Image 1 (cartoon, rainbow, N blue to C red):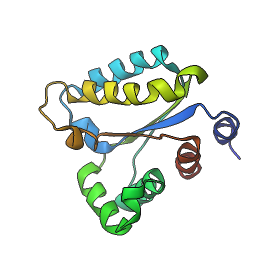
Image 2: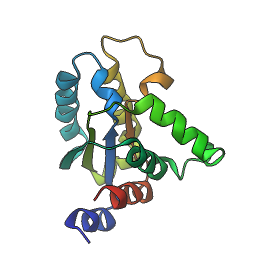
Image 3: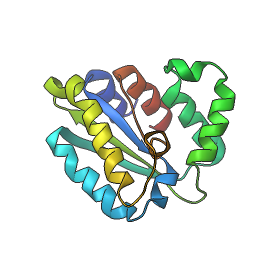
Image 4: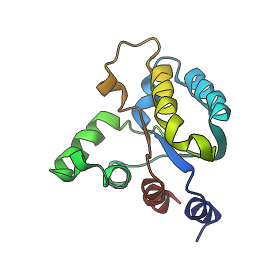
Length: 154
């Protein structure tokens, strides 16, 4: 077992953030990505960063892992995975993975505001709806979700 998986198993305050390939189509993505990384210390610390190019089948498996605990995703799972791939996939663009250790006192109270702040940053210079901008980035809500995703990626 990797050290990363051990960290995730032993620390329930770690969350995984996934920037899907489509996020890199945002205007000024690199600048926004740096801005998001600078935001992290207000909530915790970045413990790992990984960029990986995934094919459609690999991305499908990642999506399956990311959303398997979501109630809305359990019905018509394969159809929803195909739809998500069409929304999120860009050939030859990496999926970017960040592991963030949140301060234990703010994992519940600040996780959602952090997620929304990141989506707002990605939405700058765009007029995307809240639903549309969710396709750019996913962040696990629970330690179980984090572990499932990390088992696939690491």
